[in-house]
Image (cartoon, rainbow, N blue to C red):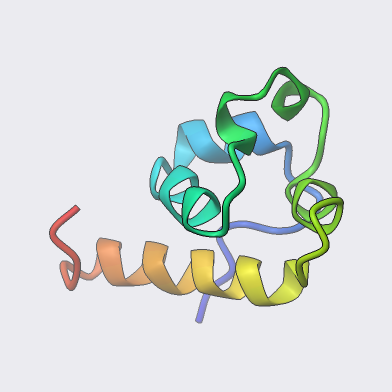
Length: 75
């Protein structure tokens, strides 16, 4: 699986490039994409500060992006 999103990416930039990220974050109870901090915080830090494992969430994000690009997801 090709990593499209990495932990050191800025949250806002990552969500703008791959909007599905916002849906994943919301499923985990994170409103990061709409938060003013998203302009300054990395994906890794934004997930970790909420007590979640960033590696697991980032892997899920990348899996969904790949599925979406392969036409396996409708959204």
